[in-house]
Length: 157
Image (cartoon, rainbow, N blue to C red; front, side, top):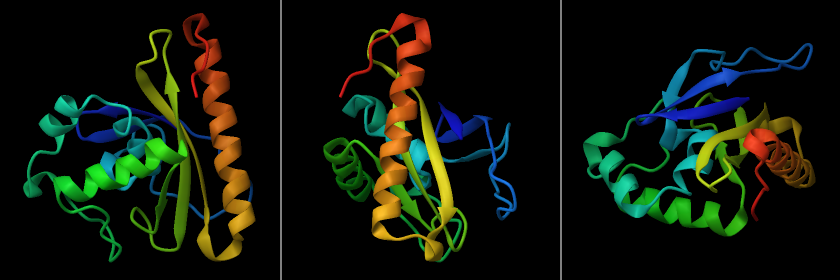
């Protein structure tokens, strides 16, 4: 997936699916709550604190899609995004669709601003921890390549 931030949602603008894989709720043109998606978390983690507060300043700003609820208040989201900044990879496990998980990395423009995210989605029960790590590295590599090509930028991180 390639997604951009649109308010408190991510908007999917590119999607490529592997053959014989389960259908996904995401598709080109679909919007999902950014705080629940790996793509959204990758972008949100790189926003200035003031902008993040304007998007997610109160509990009412948070929604759930599955029994795996994700962050439900501003402090929980800030803690999660600190982990994303530390790791350089955002994740979600069942928060968008039961049984599916995603890993994502941020795409930056020539100024270093987070403009999009690249994500890989997979069936959580069919992968190992090593697979998840490889997927995260692949997302990071793809995001760096898009960043490099976007307006002649050089990827950071």
